[in-house]
Amino acid sequence: MWQGLDVTAVSIIYVQDVANATGTAILETFRFEHSDESLSSLPRENPRAGCMSTTSLEQTTTADKGLGFGDLPLPDTKQPGTSDRLYRIVWRWHFYAGTIIAPALIVVAATGALYIFKDELEAVIYPGVTYVEPAAQRTSYEQQMAAVHTALPAANRTIFLQVFTNPKRATNLVVAGATAQYVYVDPYRGHYLGGIERGGFFDTVLDLHRTLFLGTTGRIIIELTTCWSIVLAATGIYLWWPHKANQLWGVWLPRLRQKPYVVLRDLHAVSGTYVAIVAILIALTGLIYTSTWGRAFKYAGQKTGAYDMFSKSMVCKSPPDAKDLPIDRIIEIAQQKMPGNNLTVWFPRISNGVYLVTANNNRGPQVNEMLFIDRASGEILDDRYVSQTKVVYQLGTWNYSLHVGSIWGLPTKFLWLATCVILMTLPVTGIWMWWQRRPTGSLGFPSRVDARRPRWLVATITATSILLPALGLSVVVWLAGEQLVARLRKQ
Image (cartoon, rainbow, N blue to C red):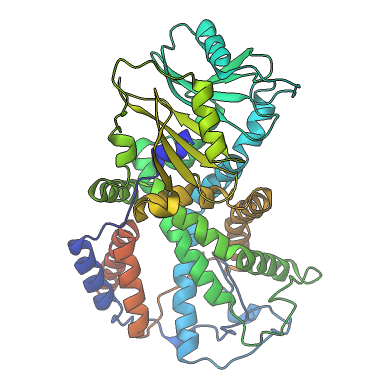
């Protein structure tokens, strides 16, 4: 919850200069002609055999070694033409993008896989701290808070307290003194169990996931990796897309008894296709935590007032000198109004402020409902469902659950885990395929295709570059570099 509310802050930046630069560069570069290379020199391979890969067999085999899968019959055949040229264009971008972002993608996928099961793994990493043995009776929350302040006298302020429906979960508080830390209390025995300070294992995992330990530079690399992974998934689906939907082997199931290259190709294409949609969803929701999109979403939240409930404290109706209700009574009111939910109780930040209690049930958005409770009278001053909040806040509260796969509990967590594992393997199988099929004495990198790009493709790339500014800038740099290399070759 702490992480979720802290990081739900992004939106799309529309930068006119980037848009103009991207559109101009794409339209200009997509009209080039490469005089020393022509389609006739390229291998005429099946453009729809299916391949979601960071590398492929196209343009990497020599004539004496044969083309495609060698003596293995292809599952479908098609004469080269406009779609063949388009296939080669798409595959070339897929190859280079996948190869360049491979190291960062592997790191992001591995750390993301760990973070999906943060709660479950913390029980292993910190045994006897986050989970307890249930008993017949619970101690009061006042007693539990007293145990924390006795153990940590310097922690003079409670930021929030979490109450879980799972009887094995310890009560979680975030307290602050010189620093903020998560602390846990046995709700049955009232014992202080320990704390997890900032900088713990999962804070380190999260830092690596978001910055690669490289600060701002790392955040830019991660944003580029996130944007290009969306492109990889989309182009991968295009490269895999079969002409015959009823073709089973090599399209829907890998051919595991064929030659090593074919096995690699099928494992890469088939597994990548199955997780492509989830991978795109993870990447899109991850944009909120990147540099450019994060700042933009935060700006949108400020302009729309989506987070005013947190930044602008509501004031109690009770007089300032009225005695506060015990925290147990505040929690009881919230449980009566929002039964069957995990509760997060945010403590007042000003002398006459109110308690903000948010609810979720381990599925769906991070927040289903929120109550604003008068600290002295217990009156519910406001009751909001997430559907009644501003759109930006709704996007933010759904985003974290979608990003880490907790949207439908353990089933989606395991699906997200499988996606992360496959994402770690795709660069490996892709680069392995390229290495096996490269021509003797050459790296076998794909060359540019001498063909005019369809207008719809140029429009799609331009629109995507505007929606994803980091991607757009990298496309401009890439195309400008290609223009420069082409001119130098002509000279």
